[in-house]
Image (cartoon, rainbow, N blue to C red; front, side):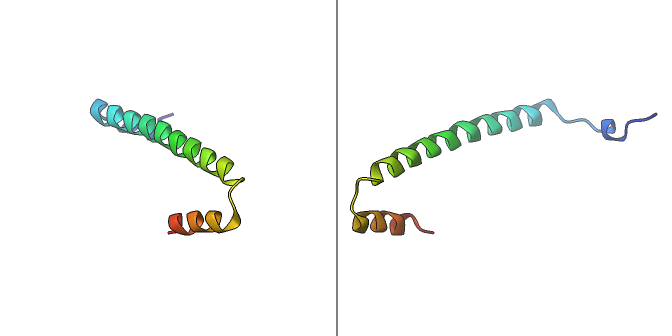
Length: 60
């Protein structure tokens, strides 16, 4: 039985670049999530007007 998906190869440099891209996207996403968590935790004590202005500032 022949495996169809094993008929192509991936260059080592492409695999190296993809693995570093994945690693960097993971730590950058974790950093953004951490900073957002700090912002949301601190925003619990803000008044409603200030929270609204912050949300409007980051709205896309």
